[in-house]
Structure formats: C-alpha cells, structure tokens
Image (cartoon, rainbow, N blue to C red):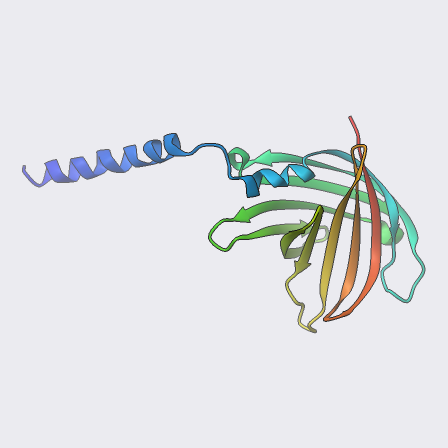
Length: 174
C-alpha cells in the first residue's frame, strides 16, 4: 500500500492548489481595471454606411457591458437598428498580461466572428481587427466625451487608407 500514499498525497495537493492560487490572487491589475471604460448600460445613436462610397444612414440601439470572469473580462451585448438592418453582437474584452495586449472576441448576427487587438492612445481606445483574406481590416476608435458619454468611429481599410463607415455616440442610460 505504499504506492497509494504518494498517489493520495498528489490527489490532495491537486485539489488544494487551485484554492491556494485563488487565495493569492488580489485585485485585477491596473491594465484590466482600465476596461471599466466600457462597463455600463448605453444608449446609442449614430450613422453608418455599408460602403465608403455610399451615404450615411441613421442607426440607434443600446449596449450593456458588465464585468465577467471574476473581474478579469468585460462582457458586452449590443443591438442596433437602422441602416442595413443594424447589427447584434456579443463581445468579450480582456487583457493578455503575457502578451501585454488587449483583445476583443465577438460574434455578430448572423454568425460572423471578429477578433481585434487593442491599445490605449491617451484617453482613446484603438482596436484593429485581424486582416481579412483581402488584407483589409477594421479599426474601432472609442473616445470619452465627458458627462457619461463616449463615441465610436469605425473605419475600414488597410495601411494608411481608412474610410469611416460608422459613427456612434454612446450615452449612459439607467
């Protein structure tokens, strides 16, 4: 029976390690806490166009973002109506400490998926999607406007050539 003792010890230690690790985890790092910028319930008004050569059309909707994963990620659900039918999506925003980058992973109706890497530039957040098959990307820029509001500009393009396709104003709602 000596073999069971070491195995039993390993099982007990294996069960205890997650508890020990959890007890050593404090508040999320400052980089993660900066995601607070997105947390809240938001009303949206703005304009969008399907193609940079077309005219903008109005859109409106809302977004709710809340802390998830024990305060290590932000989960957002968004729905807009208007131009082109609007859009509906769910997004997870997080910080990868090892890579020192912010990430957003999202799924939008009717099943398209996005991934973007983000950075903070002064008080603005800039997210750039992975390149598509044609090399094009989408850049999302969020900026605070004071009084519980922020803006989002969405641009499509590649390299130095970008065209705005969406402009949204988010206002905190209760």
